[in-house]
Length: 81
Image (cartoon, rainbow, N blue to C red; front, top):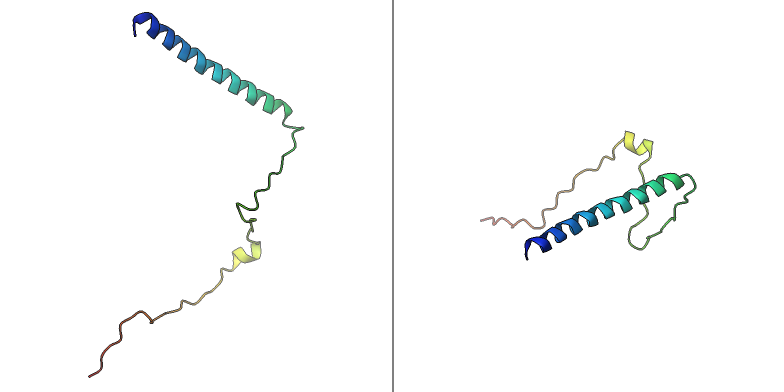
């Protein structure tokens, strides 16, 4: 790659990046202009995520009291002699 090709590559890269920035700015500007009239599409991916359930204020006030359960099934039995 000689100096002319490198200069063209650099200029092309810079201009391409600037073009992406201009396109992104145009999309943001258009979104800000029409945001009042935009209706949400309401995508429903119920088969991917379960419906959300939020805690009520009553549930947040009193945490549930769950007693711990001790399971001794996996402990080795002691020999009595």
